[in-house]
Length: 364
Image 1: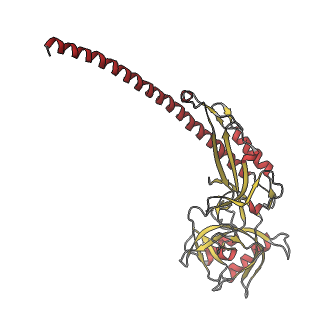
Image 2 (image 1 turned 60 degrees about the horizontal axis):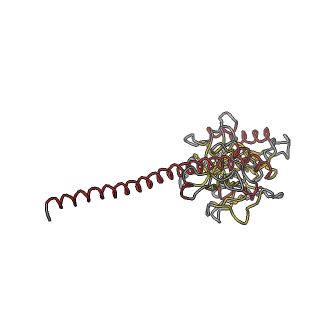
């Protein structure tokens, strides 16, 4: 091959290569532009899903907070109000927006029922639609809501560039469940007596979850088989003089929280005659009616033995209706477990000892 011919071949190769490279670059640019366009849409979809989830969370918490009704004087639970729960959930869902759309919810997309912590779901045998009219409050501990953006509610998400690939709309369906269980915390002064009841005396825990012994009478006296312990809460050491200050009201019980690992100082020793007489005086002053036969409803902490004779783990709270306090030689306190009360400002998370919480927490 002559020199001139060889040079001509090289020139033709160069021209043809430039054409191939131009085609490849054009194809790569199309792919990159498409990927960038999809990235914009995918980011928008995820952002929209997050905003819908925020609406679902707010709706679930709001709905759960209105599930129960109660007497504001006695704090006795009186029933379940699905209508109020759905209305509150709807209001809070609508207060959230996605791309300028106020997020509405369907009544059929809401459920109430019993939250099973073992399966992390609503118990199918105790799950009810919002149209249920007769529901036992003891069966209702959770409120679930779906927030949608689809053809049935709020319309689907419209794509910006994904329509190039045939994706014109995207549906979103998110869920949230709020749990309205049993009291986990009380404020300073809510507990009025330095008595902590033992969990197994208040509830049956053989199934793995506590079931309160509603209506059962308890007798507390210092003996080997205890239903309760004397406590001065976080003060140490636990002694008769300090306990007497709580009995008379000279000292106020602190705020307590079963979800933060609170350990109470306890003793099962016998109180002095002076202290027990003060306990009798306090009962007679607090009972309603203020006459023989009157009773005193009061909150008490529930404890689980920690293996130490001097401390115990706080696991929840119970309301006891004290029916009698006897001084020497008996030195005992009698009361009945009341399972029909609520503490509206308390969070759920304590053991089921019959006192409902008023502030729900998200569980799903």
